[in-house]
Length: 174
Image 1 (cartoon, helix red, strand yellow):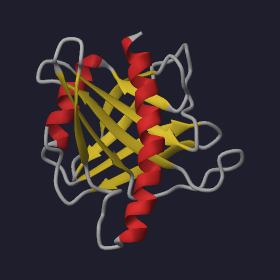
Image 2: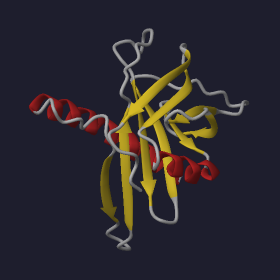
Image 3: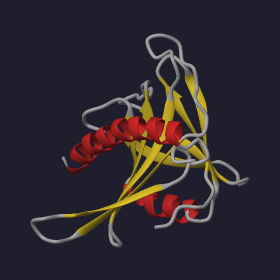
Image 4: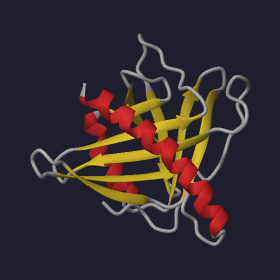
């Protein structure tokens, strides 16, 4: 249930941020809003706890076949606190190819390192959002804190395995 709610929040933020990026880049083409890590904090009004958020969009856009033609991007979204964090991977204008009876995973490389398999689980509400399994989250964050380039390869509906690249000016600050 908690991941379903986070999934919905992730999708809404990704869509809203896509519009913001287009406006920001049009206003100042020298600003790389879209391809750098973006941060925000949320304070829960019921208990005063703070949740950190970070997200970044892929540097490349892939062209999938219909019905997802027109350019697809990937986003990495991290939510949490010092104790618990969640890493989501969302495709904008596409679907992951997920099998209920198979182990689902993505391949991720950090800078020039060898690809690492990260086990994933789908969002309860969407086929365009994956979460890293809880025991993978800490490792992903630690490696992202050292990398300026992250490559994620995942299986997409009617597309097979495709790779997205995230080139940032600075590593994740978490």
